[in-house]
Amino acid sequence: GADLPRAAPAAVLHAAAARADLLMARRIVVLTGAGISRESGLATFRDADGIWAQVRIEDVATPDAFARDPARVQGFYNARRAQLRDPAIAPNAAHLALARLEREHPGEVLLVTQNVDDLHERAGSTRLIHMHGELMKARCMSCHGASPWRADIAPDSACPACDARGRLRPHVVWFGEMPLAMEEIGAALEACDLFVSIGTSGNVYPAAGFVAEVRGRARTVELNLEPSEGASLFDEAMHGPATQVVPAFVD
Ligand code: BV8
Image 1: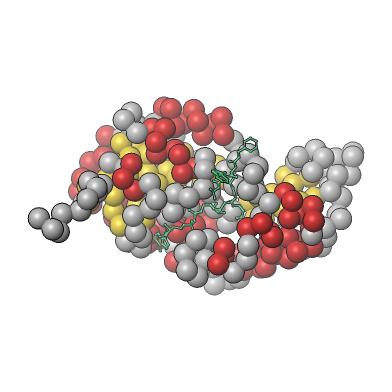
Image 2 (image 1 turned 135 degrees about the vertical axis):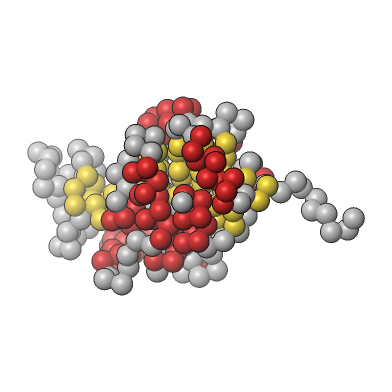
């Protein structure tokens, strides 16, 4: 009839079926995005109230932007660092559920996050890859070593660790740069039998392509507020706020 959707939607996953999936899975890769931190008070990127609605990517999140106006780029990241340090910002029920998932499946869960916040580690996750870097670290442009960010780092500050006294930049992956740990992520994707994507719009590659890589070999599940760009590529989905759907999936 007229009400039938044109494309086959991902099957809606119920908590009991999700639980059975989890119990059977042996190698789990979880990909998270900004949506998981939204209910902790951090803005997403592409929603109407998102970061990319306030500032242009090409002004703050590309190597060119940093070369042109390092102070502007530092200012952008310093504001986000200050927000992350606000005592009101803390891990939510979704971050905590993923830390429990790791504890309940020792050695079987790899959490790959696109987020530069530190809410997953504050929640207790340890097998964690920050593929787009970490807000609270600086990276040396000469020795490439990452070190904790300090408030007194200026656009011309030198690396405390290397002989070359290279300049420091935010330890984040900008547009046009290669995300971190891609080999390790590729190996985990190849070996996994369950892939869960949480709170990501599916707009930024290579992360947005992970589901297509594992499809057919691994069971694929989307947990997001609404269907993402790649929603039709997932076997199953639960749509709703992360603090509800992630604990429902894990517990
Ligand atoms: C690379 C760090 C290769 C910085 C980020 C075509 C044209 C031009 C370029 C490309 C192209 N195709 C591919 C590219 C490359 C480009 C890209 O993908 N561009 C897109 C825009 C087309 N990708 C890259 O450049 C990547 N690098 O490809 O390198 C290479 C090869 C050789 C040599 C050199 C390089 C690097 C990309 C990394 C960019 N850096 N972040 C910073 O944070 O300041 S990306 C940025 O988007 C974010 O930081 C985040 O990491 C990433 C993903 O965003 P999401 O997390 O998904 O957030 P979003 O707002 O989009 O979505 C939120 C979702 O949550 C929504 O669906 C919403 O419904 C949901 N939600 C909201 N609330 C809740 C919720 N869900 C649950 N509960 C809630 N409460």
